[in-house]
Image 1: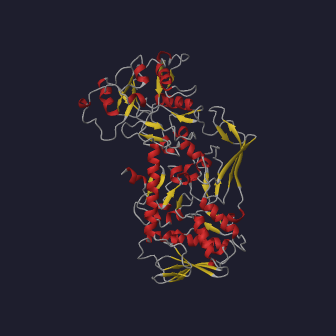
Image 2: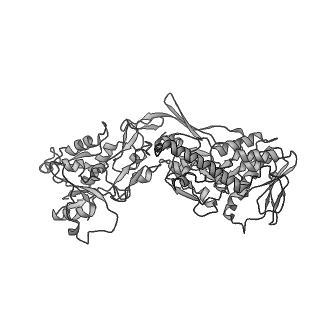
Image 3: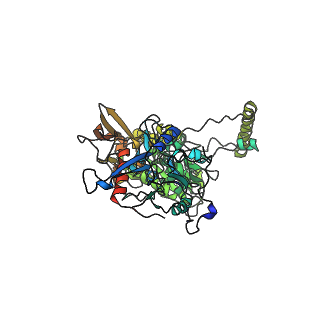
Length: 208
Length: 393
């Protein structure tokens, strides 16, 4: 287990990027270099001990091009998109929960489900545009990616980031990740869904 | 100081959190108790719903205002009802007054807003011809923020009177001048209040000392109940039980239909639309067990007990599918015959794609399927292939 160090010293952050606002821990996935090995999925399952059918992190495979079409054939490719909880700025799940079991922590912006309060009504799963909350049939509560809050609080990296063999997952404060993306000349996007203005915090790199 | 903390006097009012709609759902913005409280800061809203603080003066307006009966006072409603009934002389007029009213009365209460609808009807139930409430007007009184509650309770009691087939005038307000009320019957219990206070403190001190000696610092606190379990447990609504008893026992009552606009009333009639998926959240969160489900042979049915419904609108606020709705008018006669209404009855089915259950007749998939994995896939695909990207810093 490697020690979590901020990817860039706080002082080095360009002042123009140090936005005013609450702190937000998040993930950045360099999907240009993701090899789709699913090690993050396995590490997550192992770390969080999730039952079959509940995956906090899933890797979506997107195939492009068509072998049968000679026009498109040279450009075939696969993109792997790991999809954890987006730890949104305005979480749709939080707004849907009828009992206030979902909270967005002020100190680090992590969206968490309080399992003592959750009544397992699945309203959050209905509301989330990313399909992040999932029903744990054993415990009869909803679960989702916690950004490995138990590890982060100890100063460790989340299990998925720690495991990634291709080193394409980065963890840090949103404003601290931005200069890193710049340094790598990458363009970062967050997956937005039409009609859901949730301000997701997880960033992906894309050349498109 | 520890001993002093242990012998803190009991607050005049206490809250049963399980009945408070603010505790059961964070989507409730009920402030019934807080708006009528005459003391700023005596009612506060925290994680456990409404809480009564040391500032409480015990006027009882909040207990009377809470539709769910979550707030109970030192002298409970049944005890006060007993006190009223013991003084009623059948066939005569029964008078209740507040300490500022001038005139001869049968009972003096700290504030008339303490009286719930049930207590306003209690003299009639006891056989009195009329119940009169001497009202010197609330302006100039320190508790004048209670006034709306007193007006509302009187309005409700008169409406219930009409619904029972009486004239509304049997429960009436008598405007009087400011003065001092004279009780026709001397209160039998008149202990020296100061001595009684010190005696109570001494007894508590003794008890606290005994507890401290046996426990010797061992924490006797049991862990707080998990919210999920607490919300599954349902409590009866003591206030409504009392009202239904009074209405049942009213001599010569004959139920008549009387419709009122439901806004602001502690009664309601609900309806359920076809969006209902049978998630049971309304039943779970209903503080007063007015909604109950049945499930037999794969058919889900939701029953509604209008006599128990307090119009707290927890169900309406909590329903994600916006299937449950409060009707605009309510008929008070349901309080007399207490029927149960089946709101929806439909076969429960399981979606082939997402394995979630839903209610419906024939369709294989429900309209917006909850296949979480598929949803992620679809979103990522649409985003990275469709090109609806947005630039981030």
